[in-house]
Image (cartoon, rainbow, N blue to C red; front, side, top):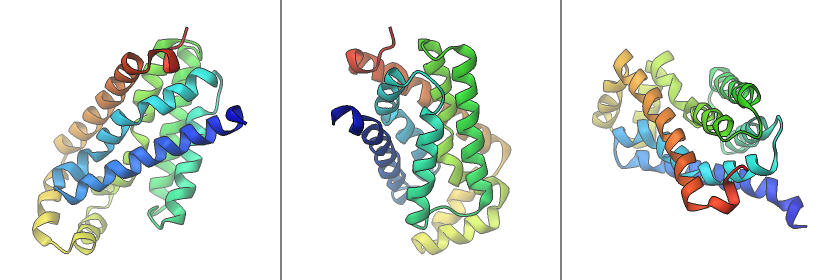
Length: 188
């Protein structure tokens, strides 16, 4: 029974960690943009534990599928561009892990850093559909001032900072998870 519950348990734990981190956005627009990085940093351990047990294709693809279904049920998936971005990122992470090696620490390190960009897919509309995002921020938080501050990231520097911080958070998450939960997540 323990083995049967392991995979869905680790996926759901990751989804809960990332979802909970997104609530940081209610504190500040800066945390809104970088909450995904916090979630990816904190959510590395369950994905690494899953990657240790599941050394073939599917860790990121299945996690993404579960994320999309849960977010759709919660009414939080907005548009095909978000879903396509999530799928693209998860398949890219699967490819990175395949090319570097399923049983390789570096394969998990680099693929998780890429995969870490997927929960932030909902933020991609900040750059590809800023009017939608601006209106959504006002509706969600009832604050034009908050939405105006959020729009300060709507430029190339904000986009690349967002990508870089989230990618580095993924790398740091794997390193920290390995140090803290060594016997549970470290690949041989």
